[in-house]
Length: 177
Ligand code: SF4
Image 1 (cartoon, protein in one colour):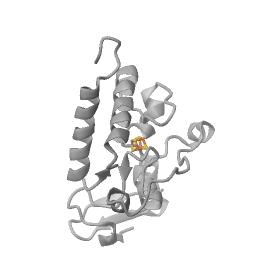
Image 2 (image 1 turned 90 degrees about the vertical axis):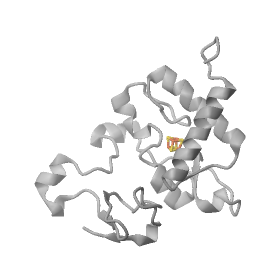
Image 3 (image 1 turned 90 degrees about the horizontal axis):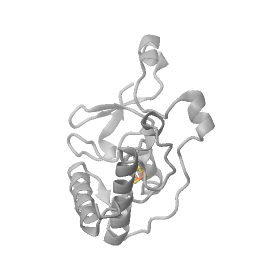
């Protein structure tokens, strides 16, 4: 950090490059606009220093980790926004078409429930809760998707774009439950 506590360009670039490597290893893409992702990486570092965790740089964090869990980067909404819009809310992560310049990232609507809704139903978790488990399979909150390549299972509204285990594409997933 600089004397004033703001991340230096070098620190932001180091984080951006790390995010880029991690994204590739996980089958994701960082936005190819390096100046743009540098500023998002800087925002993550600022939030990391301010809150102790990487709150989404494009959203207003509460500052309480429990209340911000769903927007710690990568947020709970990334994959659904990638599926539907080709980019996460901040456009830090993009799909193959945007990465390859075949289409542009556009502003996308906020998917995160309002604070009132979050307080009513809790964070928008894609996990099966203990309540779901006791309710049995018929009470599952989300469908379960199975990667037909490696058997990876995930409970969420849609399968991921890429299997985090074997990197198989979305179309290799089948509905399991
Ligand atoms: S919208 Fe993008 S940058 Fe923001 S937390 Fe989600 S994944 Fe990270």
